[in-house]
Length: 302
Image (cartoon, rainbow, N blue to C red):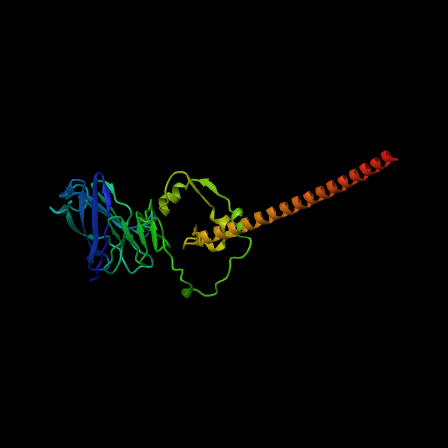
């Protein structure tokens, strides 16, 4: 029997849930295990829960039947939540849950509250979400998001570094083909257009970006100037990863300093030439006046 595992951290009104997918039997059946926790302790006793199977983590198509555990119009009695908040429930949607071309995802509603995101079904032991930390089957990690996409680590929300600095390998012994940055860095940076914007509702829902006013760049515009900064995910969505920004700013400042030094040198040379010309004219005028004075003195003595 295949072994399935998944964990989650969700809000249930004023509650939180931590659940897991455990081992299953036939291709269509498996056991969903976990625990439900609320703000003041574990949620216990019979709990109404609904489960559906999907072919996508968001939107997509529902597969098989809806399993309702409510003891009323549903097809099963409420899920019994133990004193420690744990529970275990067998699920069979009537369709294969793994081995298909695309992944399968379970959507859960507990006490009338929809749990997001959906929970991926895998054919082996696998932890996908623990207290807000999501790990996809390919090892990518999302904090505050279940969709890290192509990123090895994606964080939805503010992130802090206690020291305020990040380190990168920079030892000369680890590098080859070292060469200076090509001239024109300042002009390239000035070609970038900073914009104010807000993400669309679709972007917020599907790509775990934040709502509200933002300041940044447009990837398609950046791609024309710094193509190495722009990458695409599997859906063709572009994202910007600034590379070597500090080094580029240093070189841009160097170019600006060189440009200003050259302008200052040109101004100094121009001023020096003008001063020399004025001094030459002054000396010539003085010599002319002295000559006139000498002539006048000679005329007066005759």
